[in-house]
Length: 117
Image (cartoon, rainbow, N blue to C red; front, top):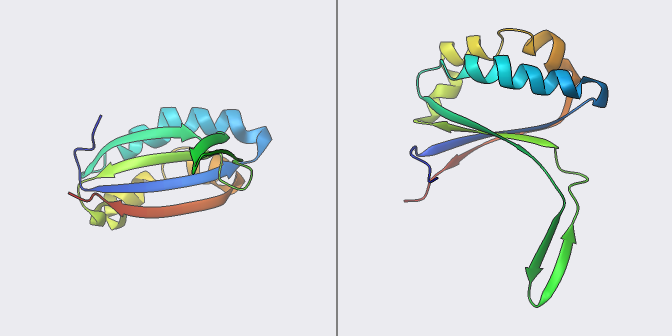
């Protein structure tokens, strides 16, 4: 499905193996629902990085996910200012995320993309 907004916020990270079940539960049942209450956030889609085989230049290249974060979420935003709003600041610190999950995340990457139209 094509994006309906002009911006995508990407959040990628690893999580301690012994906290992985809690990470996934809290992300799906608390973190995403709280964030979706923020005005200007339209959708959130989660991904898990996997190894990749890719044909380029007549050869198949094996690309390992080894150094890439295991989990990624793509947040579709109507405008970049959503990420600095009071509503966003409140949402990302609700529930168990700030105390029971965030401390066990690592290899974090965050960036913002603008759709080329």
